[in-house]
Amino acid sequence: MRIDDTRFGSITIDGKTYDHDVILRLAGDVVKRKKKLSKKLYGTSHLVSKDEAKFVFEKGSKLLVLGAGQQGNMRLSPEAEAYLAKKGCEIVTEPTPQALRVFNEASGKKIGLFHVTC
Image (cartoon, rainbow, N blue to C red; front, side, top):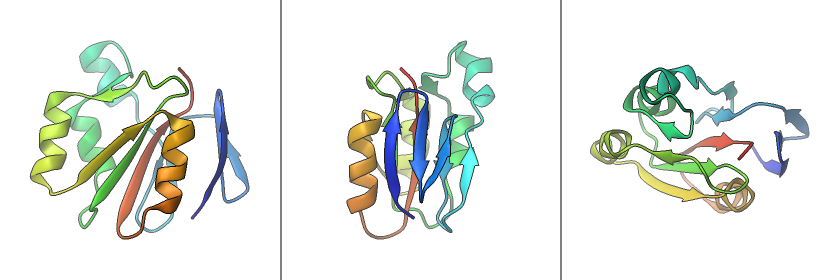
């Protein structure tokens, strides 16, 4: 799987453009992000909750690349960070344009969460 490009409001993966936040799975599947898991707790989807981190994480994942939005406004809550650390999953957080390069260059068992606005 290769992330081709991102623009405000979209991300292009393997030639297909998505106009919503996405999760990239170990098997190469692209899944729509479940923002409600964070929004119901914090009132915003810019702070990722532990419940959302549980949805994103897959057993065997060694790296989560977090595309934090075009200006880098999204972040993990302390509880989400602790959950992922307990699972042994390294986290790299960058604004989405830089995060796609990190994801493309990383090897091994990786997953991604990419915010396409803000």
